[in-house]
Image (cartoon, rainbow, N blue to C red; front, top):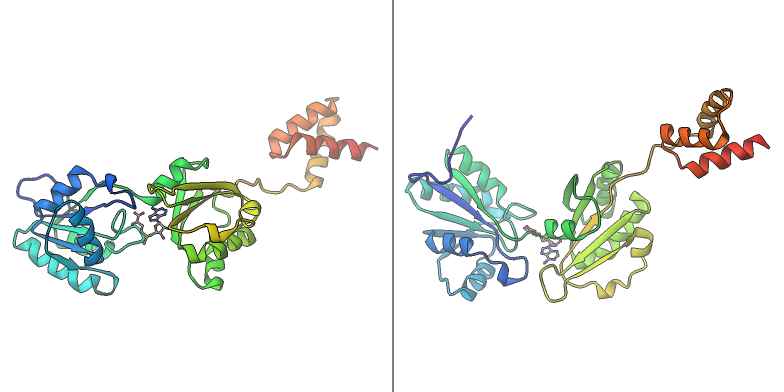
Amino acid sequence: MRRLKSFDKNANVLYMVAVPIGNLKEMTPRALEILKESDYIFCEDTRNTASLLNKFDLRKELISLREHNESSVSNKVIDLLKDGKKISYVSDAGYPGISDPGKILVKKVRESGFAVSTISGSNALLNALVSSSLDATHFYFHGFLSSIDKKAKEELETLKNKNETIIFYEAPHRIERTTHLLYEVMGDRKATIARELTKLNEEYIEGSLSELVTLDFSTLIGEMVIVLEGNNKEESVDDNSILSRADDLLKRNISLKDVSDIISFELKVGKNYVYNLLLNNKK
Ligand code: SAM
């Protein structure tokens, strides 16, 4: 066990700095301050981060730390922290480590005994979830599905029975494929496609998957998030269980309507379904 305080005067801290997902006004004063005070800024793509920092008149030497060199460059970060340097890490958009590089860095830095502190900012999945009309009490973030259809289907099979709202990231050139795959594997459920968040063309498209597959996908440009309703279907109850329970209840002189209400409550089946089944069975 190790306890590390981010605001200790003598703490050598790695700052994971979230940056805007499109709208520059979401660059926070705190993020700017931390970046300004950093001795070194490591980032996913030096050109992207240089262009972001330029917009805020911040000029710093940037060092690339991306998927293919994350492990080795993390060692350099650790050496600099040992020298008492202040270090920040920035990915291309939103939070580092969320479908972006950063998690190997954090793990290694923590294992070396240094503190890691995250500087809050924008994030695509939370914006999409909060503005969608789907449940946000419990949710599961899946990120990107495999680009290979067979593997994507296998992933979806493992998610099929989840009750929580499920969130996917997707690229514009795969949104049509993924919407169809979701419909095919997950069945008809409510979903929201959230596009171009925080930007001028921000758009939320809500509907059932059977409706969403009919979209003109050429109009879906830019970055997007898919928020999908969890599996809320009740376990299917077979008619014989309903009829057998009804038999017991009807013997006690309970009316057909009340029997339907009781069974509907007990077995979580629609009242009308039970009522009509019992009515037809009586004939
Ligand atoms: N680290 C980022 C975050 O915290 O949200 C996510 C980076 S991931 C490489 C990029 C994906 O995030 C995009 O393909 C898209 O699914 C989603 N995304 C990022 N910015 C977005 C935006 N402005 N609108 C909609 N989706 C966005």
